[in-house]
Amino acid sequence: MTRIILCGCNGKMGQVITSLADEDAQIEIVAGVDIFGEQRNAYPVFEKFLECQIEADVIVDFSSPQVLEELLSYAREKKLPAVLCGTGYSKEQLDKIEEASGQVAVLRSANMSLGVNILLKLVKTAAKVLAEANFDMEIVERHHNQKVDAPSGTALALADAIQEALSEEYVYTYDRSKEKKKREKHEIGISAVRGGTIVGEHEVIFAGTDEVIELKHTAYSKAIFGKGALEAAKFLKGKEAGMYDMSEVIG
Image (cartoon, rainbow, N blue to C red):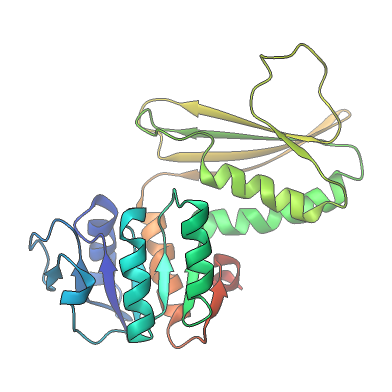
């Protein structure tokens, strides 16, 4: 059994994870932390980490970056591993996460979906071969019309995965309207689409001479991110201090 403290438990993703945990015999949410301390769940909810003195194995965070410092302080004090599912961290906050990983196990991912993390592996494998064969590489991501950031963190993670596989430095191109010129060889194009209620789509296109290979992931609900977070929590329980990522969860 993996006992979880769920940060951001009253938010949309927090409620999704709560429902998923109820169906998983290996998971128990023993407490929640949320700045809106309303009691919506069977487990106790606290407005601050310092108020929570309940024994647990892992912290799972789906809250905002503003809670990060308090969360990391609590994790260090209690020697609790932390699964960080949030986005929008500043450079200073990323440095603090790295520093905390010297004392406790920390897992952070731009996307908690197991499928997306398989896609990251596939993209690396494909890029190693296809870049050498002069294939052009483009990423198209699609999300709902309420998403404020572009491109998505996952699109950037896919670009980074491609970059890691290559022997030469490639540049990321986000907007082709500013210059009238043909595509450069060493670039990765990243396009963002916003509309309707699209949960999330990420497509990586490898375009060569007379052939195209497309690798695509489509999210139909936010539940996939919650499932990944719970798998990450099981994985991180009892782990030594250090930085971990979803590639280690999926093996």
